[in-house]
Length: 405
Length: 227
Image 1 (cartoon, rainbow over the protein chains, first blue to last red):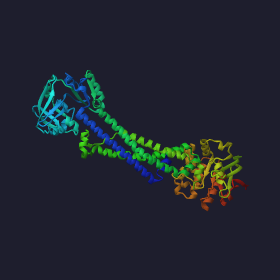
Image 2 (cartoon, one colour):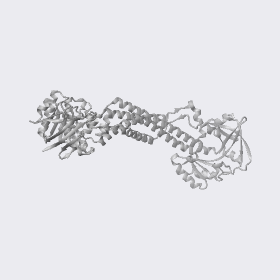
Image 3 (cartoon, each protein chain N blue to C red):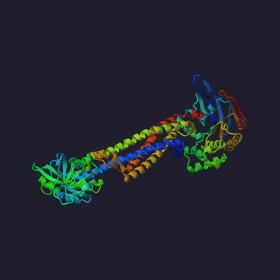
Image 4 (cartoon, rainbow over the protein chains, first blue to last red):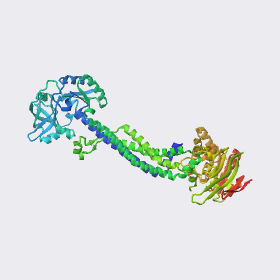
């Protein structure tokens, strides 16, 4: 009956309870939606990084990544790649040659990362071929084709069919040049990446660098999904025990931090909302207790002990908070679900987002554990908010309270 | 057999620096099954006296002994528990729980005592029938007249099977007809079920029904008459 009394007490002053419930609902809705928004943004950034830039797993010679030492290549990379592709959970694997060097147009030059790729294998690992805004992904039989980012093309003031010169060092420390013609221009909506990455064919780069046949600096692997990456990583490690096998969280720890930081920010944001609401709930509950001094005194007089009085106030506060919390969670879920399939257009600030590597069209991503945690946090807020009013209620003296007219 | 023994009871207020003896050395025994009215003018100390007897207000001195237990020697928690199991209260302003129905108000006390659902339901119906408003069992207090609310309050006071019922001016807010009804009900319960009633009043109709009338003035017993 204590539950019943507390629940009915919430609705004794419908207007007052409704105001605080609406305030809680809007606050929680904003919190849930914001969390889904930032989670979506982070997920998109990570997905983009995995699919366009780093893939799930990479294999290197131990010292390669530290100094980008081109002499640290895997001589039998092609064979290892074939073995990795045969792992059931692997969607695709691609053997790459990598060198940081210079690309020059007739007007200017820029430092870039040159990746020599097997176009067919690369299509199973990265999605650069789907990000082309002009041309194609090495589909024409032209000599020395190159695919560049739109940002780099703008910087070099080149267009489709323009010639650019790559200047690089081969493995014997000779400076070599190669003239390449632009066959494709891509745009991944990450300005930093687009400005600093060019792709040429594996065979062309291998020839220029004088690498042995079938060698490679990097094997990029895309797993069936993110959850099985640790399993795949272990399997690859058994195939390539002498090399370094790293997942995307190790290759790009900032991406992992991004997820963790977003999670933390989400909860901080919700805690701030709840902290602000806490005072509203305390105020309401104090009014409730001060209005019912006589009633509480009567309950004490007829034999309701202090623990039950305390619980009655705490329960009322929980019900009040939870009513708003549940409405807020449902509302926030509905809004977030809608924007999971309908993007939020931030293209007005598009360049800023692209410079930071984020997509200006954000799709929300709602984590159900967040909803459970928010609900628990709302209940805790209700409990905390009730403590002082409940304490005040317990200070009532039944004889004094009953004298109130 | 005395159900209540009151020994040398004092309640002195001196909050404003002026000593006010609201109850000034009362010695009294209340026997089981009494139907007693405490009468006196306003400010004579009737309500304070009932509060002291009911374990609501701590006396400055003296003892209230119920069934051999010195009520004011009990610690706060035990005292609340004592009230729950031994004393029924009827207040002047009814003081029902507004969010509960008449039935739930009566049932509430039994639930605090830990009765089973079936026993609670049965006794609730019995009591509301006894006070003549069983048909209003599902009505909330706001939907009941003053007289009906006070009858629910009497049913609630009896729900815990108390040793005695303290009623503080139970008819003060009632019209003549409701007063008559309520008094008849209380008298019947007293007569048939031997429930001890002690009520403060200055209502002549109540005084007429009482079998023992104790007159208090300035915190002292002026007269103690048994009819």
